[in-house]
Length: 304
Image 1 (cartoon, rainbow, N blue to C red):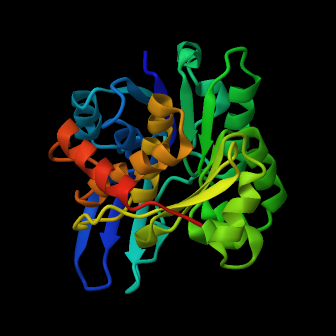
Image 2: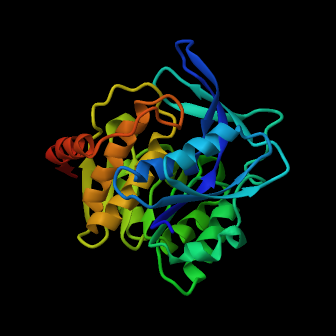
Image 3: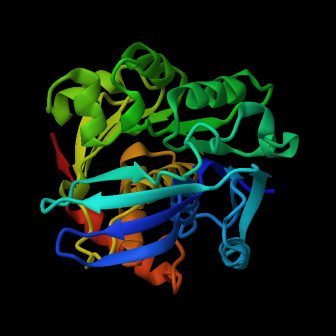
């Protein structure tokens, strides 16, 4: 069985960049990006997700070939189909196709976690509707076995749900929103203040992901904030980079038990993600590549 599981969505993405380039019908989904983000660091990785009735079989075949342990719950409805629309500054929004399955319908339930998976050391809950995330947090926290739990909120389900998001942040080990999600939570764009406030809630660490500006990580044990820069990869498609970061972060913590080092692992995972179009990589990074990128990131850390 896997040491680490991601819980989230499969999607089919139509990616449109502001310069006119586009890629249609790309396999995607936060659960896959997070699982593959963990893979440079730990061998036994799995994912748990619902899948619609129109997911191309080659996606599952490729993930199996990549040694991702799959626990898929079939749903008799179309998968989530997204337009991923990018602005000139790199910000983006996802828009569901009119005939897409809904995010709620395609989000895994707590009761759908196979009993054998509870032996895992850690889980990461990727962005989904807040009620589904709450159910998963409660299921994992109420289980007899104790696991590390990471949570990445969904920007669509923050405004109007702030009290529930803060409550969930208190129940997880790693709370990892984006800069936009932190802005929506606090009503202002101040990532440093946000990560400190969130770090007072999370058991081990809070992270605010800053896109091309790297990330801020709060270590609950030392009460310090560290800025972690990006690795200067040449980006092809930045979709899923935040999810890959989260998967790499949790995997890094399983290896090192150090939250700043975990953020370095997540940063390297994101750098590999952005170099690939879509979620399914054409090649896997070598251990030497991963270590070289880790060395670069570590050398450029700074305290806030």
